[in-house]
Length: 296
Image 1 (cartoon, rainbow, N blue to C red):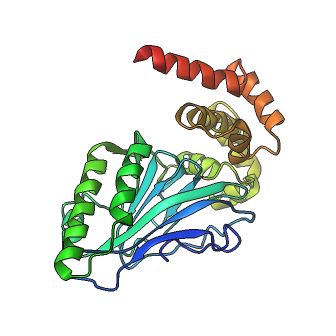
Image 2 (image 1 turned 90 degrees about the vertical axis):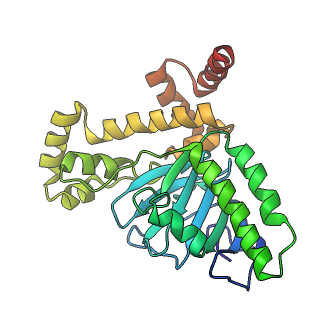
């Protein structure tokens, strides 16, 4: 199955749409499947990057949340509205953080049709993560294509690949690259990435300082001078900003958002949110829905 098997995340709770055994060089879908909601209960090793020998497309379902990181130093948070588009050979990791739920619809594919997209840099290793509005509509359009009866001829498999390619191009036309961090010559930018790459995990400031080649005291002092706040304060602000995004763009319960932001309890999250935003998370969500409705 193409949906990667992370130990102790979801066990074998998977839904495989298909696995094609015929691979015409012109273009073919290899496999497709869906991971139903499950929670990871351990930490992941940041060195555990892996690559695929084919193109891989994954769109995050509403119950999914996690992060992405690759060999180029690019990293970002993942949630409903994001999809990942990876060319063959790119070493990367994406998935849930500790205590995060994860759910995705995933397709692997290969062949000359898709290599053309890479040749024209429509698929590119520097653009692995995208954001698209109205994700549910695209998922609804993908599922019938993937659940259709399997073609048995070369022509049928190529036609299926061409139909997927057309839909993928349509998705890309309505998407924008997700903002993320990249390895930079500026230690401060790298520090910001390391502080926020996975908000669900505990952060080790001592280790970040060592990665930057500084003592902890020097790192904390210099960071406060650049950011106007301590590393922990900066991280906490980013947690609330990300929580605002989840509250506005998903229907995830506040309890789940609290865990995704690394809070042990919903009560602590609600108190911190109210202190910084002037209202509890539930009221912020209602206000955001009201404002969006009236703007329409």
